[in-house]
Image (cartoon, rainbow, N blue to C red; front, side, top):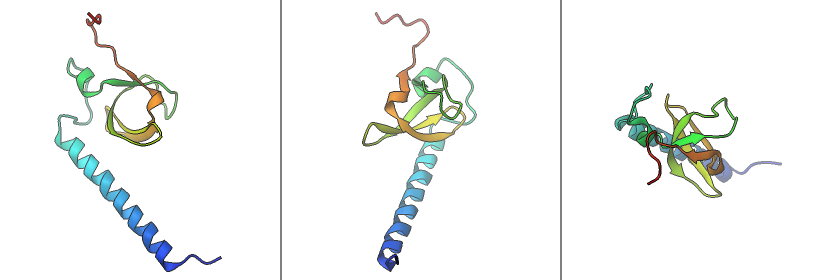
Amino acid sequence: MMISPITIIWFSLAVIVIALIVKAVTAVVSGTKWKTPMQESPTTPQVFPYIYRWNRMCRKGQPCAVLVRGKMNSCLVMFEEGFTAVTSRNALRRRKLEGHHGD
């Protein structure tokens, strides 16, 4: 079975576009107040409003932020030290703020 040259070109373009998207997201994130590594502070819950709940990638219980929401309930998340991953939104829970009782 031979792969057509057009298929190879389309695949190459898709890889380049994905690489450019990742580079753009990284540039946007580094230009905001999300600097790596980030220490725990009173402002951290607003910057990383979610907790990763699944035991994947040894990340259970770590604060994270959603950068991009995707189809099929997926999302691109970034953890405090700058690590990014695509995961299910079912793996995320809202982070509880200290001193906030929901009133």
